[in-house]
Length: 361
Image 1: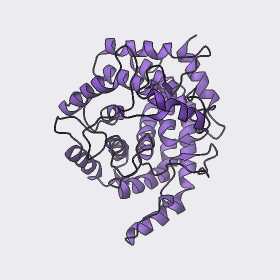
Image 2 (image 1 turned 180 degrees about the horizontal axis):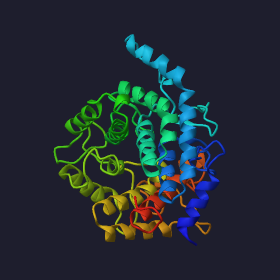
Image 3 (image 1 turned 90 degrees about the vertical axis):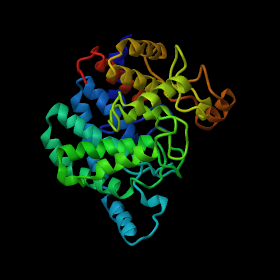
């Protein structure tokens, strides 16, 4: 089995005719498309040379967000009048494959996905030179930039759809990364000082006494999503002492030697297993730091988790943080998501970054 080609095939099979990528075609709660997951899946396909697939995804995002323009204008009107929005006023975090908001309950007010898609679009256009796509999506980019500009300091759910009452460093990094990327390409769409203000706030409020970045403001703990602050969003550089302290903390607290990476130390979701995509992210960080020999064992571990059909799961439950919490989630939502398209995308990204695919990212 060639996990590289299998990953491409699984992602292709999970892309709807609309261009949307389903998060997982078999898991009860993941039959939707997230801007966050979808952007990383699109990047994986770009890294594999499958640019038409990524192009179709970004076209879908543009159409989907344009349909939300009346909702955004209502929200911004409330903010201008000093009114407190309801949670239903915020833009959704996941959409049906046809681009409609989901009708069932979800933890929807999440800003990181909106920053992520901006970052991903600029990266895609830079790779492909597709200026026509950029021109077509400028209205959706402008819409997203206004949304993030109004709300970046407002507490919202993190990338794991938890802690609605907190401000999260990985979310601030995604917003910074997306707006900074847009600012570099189209300065008229973003207030010129906004990315720097976000960065100053994040690094002014989000560094613990020990020198590491924190999961959210007001805690000393780390989260593996803090890897994103350096790769790819560049809120900090990979050799910044604050990131090096963060990386050391993640390695000590969240990376099982010889195994994968946990989300955070108190994770009880499906018992708190090791996540494929985060293990790949740690490998990506090592690659960016010029340490490929530390990255490849992580990829070997990931490859060993593929099923007979090559499908990678969301997480691996063999070494759970809270084994007694696994059964409740299985009873609620079924077995762990497999395949998870985001897991396969990260395999494509990191193997390409290590020079083992057609795209050197």
